Image (cartoon, rainbow, N blue to C red; front, side):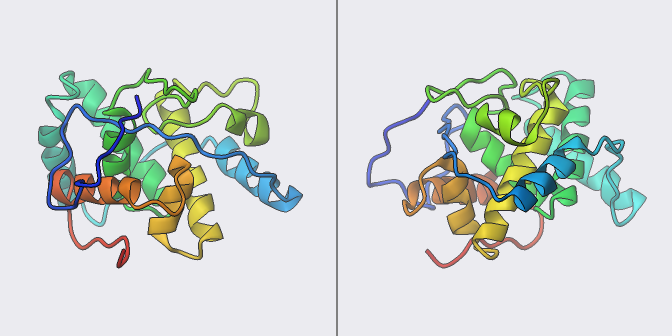
Length: 204
């Protein structure tokens, strides 16, 4: 559910655990080559086997992130499957998994069946028009891996459009390009809830 944000919002204030700001990615015509490339990225069904630098890194990351996510996802097996899939899909798209977790916190509060007032669906609040553009009749945006793959692929697409500017890419993702509130909320969640190593959005 979209919240009306006051001007007092700043990075110094942690995002409340229950607050979400689901967006509405804007439909934009895609060049045939771009559409084909995105469709290929979505259609690849490689097994989600996340590759970490080492076994110890894998254990450390999953243990740490699982502990942080316990209250929002009480079921341990479901939580670990979710985290492994986030890591896999984020890395596959060239994204920071912790940033993706921050985005999910802001977009849906980790609610699998969340639907925004604009119709965006699932963890990463993907708009249904993306299924028509780059998916197939079998694409279910309430399916965990499908939703995460669409969301990460779409954000990667926006990053490419914005030449690596994550601040503007996040604005496109949320349908609020040019407004600071949403990128700041994602960064606040990223830094305060999911930090793991260096991260930067940009000097805005």
